[in-house]
Length: 328
Image 1 (cartoon, helix red, strand yellow):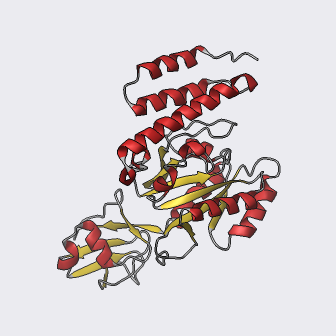
Image 2 (cartoon, one colour; image 1 turned 135 degrees about the vertical axis):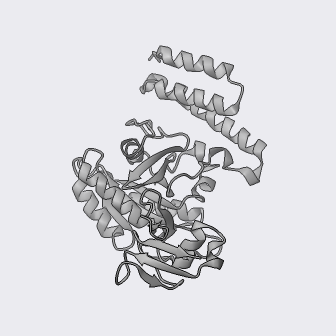
Image 3 (cartoon, one colour; image 1 turned 120 degrees about the horizontal axis):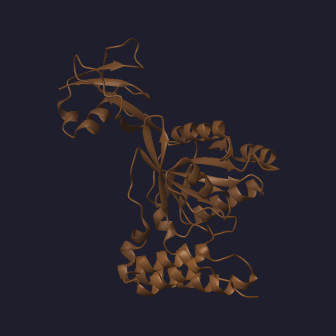
């Protein structure tokens, strides 16, 4: 069976041969993979291309050294929080990123479409949350660097295909992460992880709930995970479910927005300070400026207090949407 490769493949191949850096070579090969038709005649071609990417990445990491392993594939944090999309092949996480952000992720029905971290910014009310799509768990080409990239974010979005044994998939993801000493943080848990482990805020999202078997699959997933983790259904074609996903992700991250104002002036409601749930007035002062915590004399509160303008102590625990007037 002939390969019947399109002209775009040969254009990408030319770019690969002219590329000077490893990163440019990898991008060119990824484009060759993207435009290659999927059928029996291209299986060997795709296999060789994936092996070539794997070797290039291994060579780059070896050159960078063990301390910098994963650095080449890291994504700089932006926005209020960084969330990694984690899942098995064809879990729907790339489609979720493409729908909710400006990333224009590569979405396809075949497995292992995502080869490199793909970031995008999701809007929730007046903040931006950075979502990063990762290669699926089980991708041998990314196995050498993926664990290190997974150590850095503020939280995970665990994408589970509700039409394909969702409870088994969720268990497989937890087991794979545990192999790298990464624990999923249960809802409401703010305790530190065990020594040598990392614990991350987690949202479990059941994808494809609008497809045959999806609703039943989500009920099974929710029964297995809902008591422990924030668990939410989603479909990229349902606006209400997408909005519910945004809200659930914000809640799962256990963060809050705190606003500040100067005496006699209106508060700045466009640029909140992002703090962890449970943070105090003193924490907010330190977030505004590192020296404010030491010089803080008093604070007035609008929002969660008994009345607007209430004077509060330095250890007062804040809530999402509170407005503070700090007096130094």
